[in-house]
Amino acid sequence: MAVTINDIKKLRDMTGAGLSDCKKALIESDNDIEKAKELIRKRGQAIAAKREDRDAAQGIAIGKSVGNFAAIVALKCETDFVAKNEKFVTLAKNLLDAAIENRVKTLDELTALTIDGKSVPDAITALSGITGEKMELGAYECLEAPSTVVYNHFNGMLSAAVAFNQENVDGDVAKAIAMQVASMNPMKATRDQIAKEVIDEELRVAIDKTKAEQVKKAVEAALKKAGFNPYYCATEEHQDEAVRKGYMTQEQVDQAKKLMAETAAAKEANMPEQMIQNIAQGRLNKFYQENVLMEQVYEAGENKETVAQFLEASSKGLAAVDMKRVNLNVD
Image (cartoon, rainbow, N blue to C red):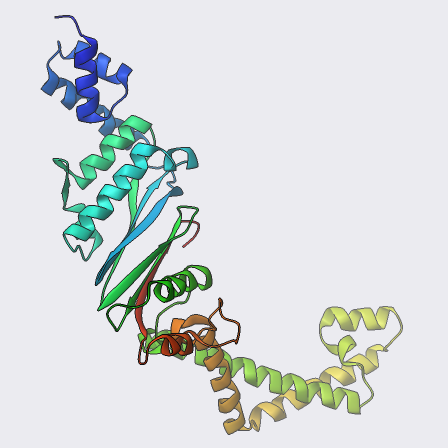
């Protein structure tokens, strides 16, 4: 039986494959539509398998909010060209709509869904076969709260979602905070959401840095008092330079090194502990200000107010209680 253009179009509508692929499948299947569909599916799987080791570094990260639920889906591919392909974008949107409709909580739950009669993995594999590129689900995030908002960045690679503790949050206010998340990349919405081990490590680093600064100040003061230039004593390279240029003799370098070691040891043995803790806590607070959404400076504001202050001014007691951010340009 001859393959007609109507048969080819019908198969194309059913599979999304190219006209030439549909024609070839119909010829091989003796014009059996179901067998032709299976041939196209298997070819898609074969293409996907061949490209499994490729890097899917491009794609789309897209989110959506429906009242008290928001979700972000990231669908990845190999090239920017395919990332902008209409079928690729449509699949990402369909995945997102399915996630929203089913209130999906995890990536595994999303993968288990069915879209247009196909499992999610099969739908991705089918499109991978059509485009010839590796495709995969890169991420899935969701939020549930009295109200939510999503901001999709114009480059298509970044999406941010924020959850609030109140209903009916002003749309402009909510969007502004989602844009803050997109641009300033906080770790969490509130400091109590940051893991204890992260805080402990930040505090340890802050204490070590503070102690090192105190030792350095003491050593530099002792060198100056003894008539040595701290710059030429700082490292072995600097010391060698000082001797080579005649700024110090080797005997003076040895004296300076001895003084530095003795001063450092004495300072380390007699640290002002409370002062160290106070300075380190100040550094930890700066870490919070940089990495906690509610404590960040509100970037779109003019008065250097924090996000918490901006939200409080908008509605008494209003706060961001959670956030998600997916960026395919990175991490």
